[in-house]
Length: 87
Length: 224
Image (cartoon, rainbow over all chains, first blue to last red; front, side, top):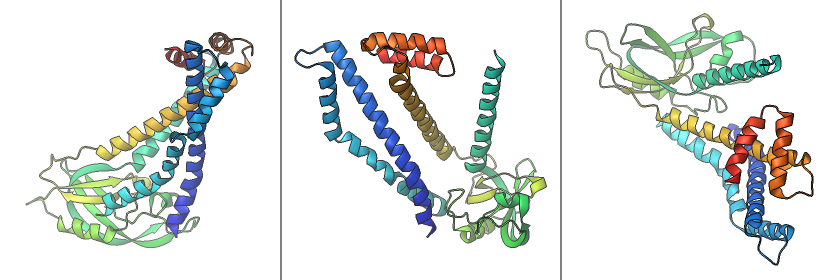
């Protein structure tokens, strides 16, 4: 059915966007960790270890998983549009 | 301004105009009109103007005759407009409109003559291009309180805001990528982050180019 075709196209675009968002968010988190270490300079860990541990904690957290919600967006948009246009 | 900068800016303006025209065609608009007639007519669609009509099959270039519903209407100032009333395909434009029969009935209900005019607000997209015989596609119709009734364009504002946000996000992603991946190639690997930022900034300034000014401005935000 045509709906599947639309979603296939949307799926490709969304996957690209999902990848970009994950990389971007992780890069921002890495930068924040580095800045935090530069400012605070906590003893005991060197910069590289601190950043690596921070990134591991980030990867385990919920935020990277929330980006997967992006795949639901086309359904919501199409549903809302159909309702508003036809009813 | 060097010739290259002029060409770059010229290209950007042209692209911006195309994007604006595209959005103007696809996004819904509201007209307050008096509906004068609704009917079907066998119309030939083909060649250049087929992109302005709904397409059931992709890639057919021959002229075909189709029964198309029309709604004729008149503005308050006397100008006339003719809308077509077609179901949009599933693919483009993404209106998912399949109630054109109902819409035709609703429009017929609101027909009026000049002696006792009834005003209606027609939501439509598309252009009326006379020489291509293209008509805007009416999406919905509702009774208006008078010739001055109008609808605030909420949908357009929301769509444009979302598009603007997406564009901003892409721009930020690109700036971040430049700052983290491309620019450190100019900096010495042994220096600390702050020094690396300054050197990269200096190297960026030497290299110049489109994003250097924006990158510099962005860097001042980051340091705060």
